[in-house]
Length: 322
Image 1 (tube, helix red, strand yellow):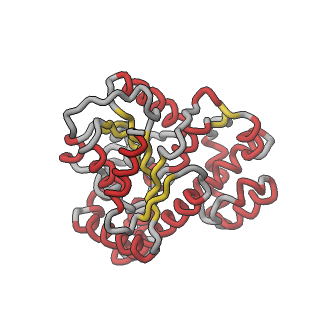
Image 2 (image 1 turned 135 degrees about the vertical axis):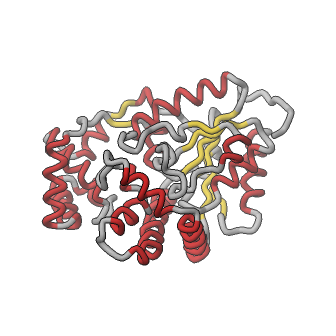
């Protein structure tokens, strides 16, 4: 890291590096940290969980020592962590990091977290365990696509942005509709908690987006193979052995963990974990890219360019030294 101590009082309140899974966000953040005194605010809904290290591609101990990181290992896998909680925690961290004379750097691909932080979060009814159980039972009987079709009848705006098998979000949208008697999309439009919103300056959001989808798929395949070599299946076995976790928890719905849990339940052979996990990760990346390309004002950088990291660092330095 540089020994200089620049004055960030007139700089953007934060910088952000976003992009689909496996696009090189961590490497870019570490490269930027060698040029600027940044502190990373993780924007990844899987990295918040303790004991979920291999399957989340969590930064290594060396990487965590090299640059201060926040919002990693802050929850037990049995506990939930919402976008609203992230927005509050990240806003507090932005203020304290800047007070230390450093630059907050948001890094991650959980774009719902980014949206909650920058646009505010709607006040929605709290979760209802009994209602969720009923919706889960309906999904088990009919399938999530059938519940997605039901959601399209009562909340077409929300259904239009969800995949037919996105069970977690379909469940929440149906839950909100039944609890509030109004579509979730209507509540979000009417009731933003603007006090939680953090404006991000134009050009301060750097998005790593591959021009060749095959390049990203190859990186996903290599990463998943490495996870398996590093003991991912044993990691999930250890989580299951605790006895207080189950497949419907948000932590165990994370990509890879869901497929591994299903295989260990006997839903399909262990030999299929790699193919099913990679397919689910590719689907996640596709959803992330769709969301990214709808975001105005981002500085898109070709993640598959040989000098992608250098381009991002130069752009960030140029922004700060205007």
